[in-house]
Length: 378
Image (cartoon, rainbow, N blue to C red; front, top):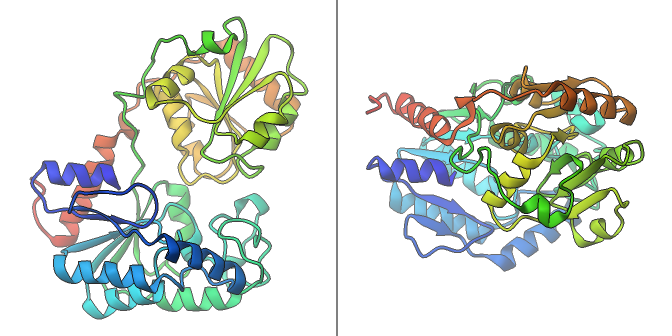
């Protein structure tokens, strides 16, 4: 979102971004809704009622007031299920004011009754009607099942928007959307982009500091590690690799790090993206065992740094890896290990790929804006 915004500003367009959680801002074109109490209440409300997206009236009214002042030609929505938007207020406003809307879906929440992802448990209820949700303990969490009511209400709110088009970060997710109640809209894929000035082959001493220079390194990176992201796959893998190998996982919490076996090194986070690029570059293989990826950003970062990737044949990642890594059908740890050995021995070198750059992503979005407004892209 920020990359698109900065590119628009650079080209002289009047762009505003608004967000509800995270960093603050003193820039009048970069607006933080700043309602921490409302976020906590919304999270609690979601757990107690099972209704995510139906609180946060105060911050949503603030957003609508901003829209009234700005009078945008296009409203570009990203994730809105982070406990800071009331979807009834927002979509009621968008429908009655007939505003052009582009909605980038980064997960599946917009067309389910509860969850943001469902491929891990192979649930297909969303195609017809959600109920008796098996994912209540996953984000967004709930103590009770209200997925049937959510599905009906979200379908009512999210359909029938006159000038709305949907963008996804992968063809895989676009295909899912086309099977959902959002299929009435124009649906296109625009791949996410990374900063290839940062994520490139980078030499450094990070591996020396970890004291693993003489090991074959299997790397995994995630923002939050869980079994859905493949943490259990790495732990099973650690039981079959020999002493020449070491697993390095970035993104673990303190409790997870304490419970790791001796051949797995846990890192909470690197100090910078450049340091992460060093780690990608020094690793022999990047293993992403996630079963729920709508794009696979860390996999693209690793490939951009010259490190081959191993992934499962699921979700969006086969689109990305193609012939510059390995795609396997089984999650058996012995098969995973065998394929890691084959990748390393074959010395696969990822090719330069300009498909996933920030420049290409932002240019595609700007072209999309121009098409919506029927103007030339200069």
